[in-house]
Image 1 (tube, rainbow, N blue to C red):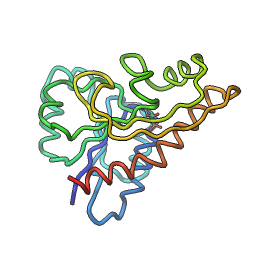
Image 2: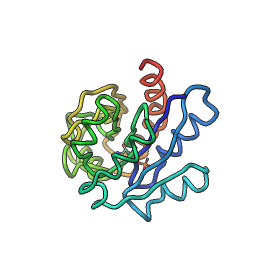
Image 3: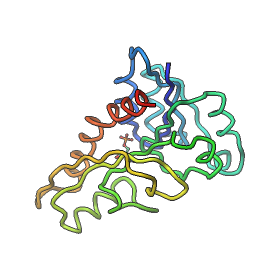
Image 4: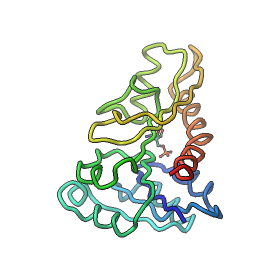
Length: 189
Ligand code: GRF
């Protein structure tokens, strides 16, 4: 069995979608979900889905090797950031070369970097009057949103689309494509 460890900080709709996609899969399983937000809705989803989940605070993540040690015990084949908001420390990036991926809700290199997350991305896309947006699935390095791009998917946006409508279109793209890309990476590795 290949093992996925998911990281998330928020609602966790991608986490739920990924867990559902791989439930009953013959070669791939989600080992657990890690979060840095004690009140994140993703934890409710994990409880409902019966998926093991662990919370750590920022001090534990940034100042100690404890999360790294946990990950080493879990022996993941892929670490997937699905709406995870903290920067991954260099020792963790170095311990899992080519094994950490992220999803970004825009077409990188546009609308990436520090501060570009969640609604902020879609507000910026809207205010630039873009006619399309999309998602980028990429490897993680020590810099926000700068690792090698694995796949991008686009969606058209109309002038009259609100930020909420753009958000919904991007979420739909994420839900449609992210599990499949994860599966392809794991089956090719
Ligand atoms: C997604 O749009 C993802 O691209 C971004 O954070 C959002 C997480 O959404 N990195 P959810 O928590 O999975 O619903």
